[in-house]
Amino acid sequence: MTWGVNLMYYNCPNCGKKFKYAEDLIAYFGEEFGKCPVCGTMGVFEKNGARTIDDFDYEEIED
Image (cartoon, rainbow, N blue to C red):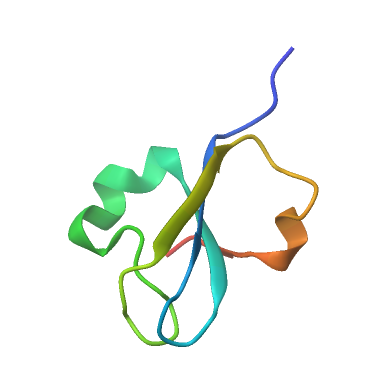
């Protein structure tokens, strides 16, 4: 049984945005991985794992 891709969940300390990145995109994003898509501030890591109950509260960053 598979749960899909592992996600890393963040919130932005500057603007409050909630967002998530798929762990398999670390190499793609490089130094930008974990940064807020709105203001560019490094996000505060909250949790990681398979999709959580509150998953839809977080915007998925894909490219």
